[in-house]
Length: 164
Image (cartoon, rainbow, N blue to C red; front, side, top):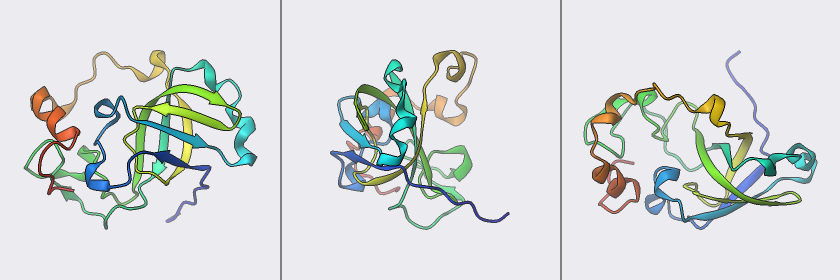
């Protein structure tokens, strides 16, 4: 098998319309609001989602550039392999974000912590489950050497971003 087909279940709505000004990760966009209006045929799949405080969004990075295997991620000015980063220029440009679920209104999910461009195709939603998704003994590889201040400045795009 060389190809996989996804079904778009919605388009993510957000205040972010300029790629270079969009925060890099949800942790840097806690006040950014958005919403997801699922296509009608998927509404039944939202049953009980409102019981979760956070959800995991999987989406297609539809405005990314062609893929590369080496990239300078937003946190550093040295190259790393694409698979040791979350940079968007991937062979399969699938994005992942954990966002806060503020409320559900029928087929509409109101979310915050949105680091996603407006109109991005959504391919899946999963509940965030602390019992399963939080690994206390995990390490974060090369990212652990980055100072918190540097991460926050670069993550909020408060610098001249020429890397992505």
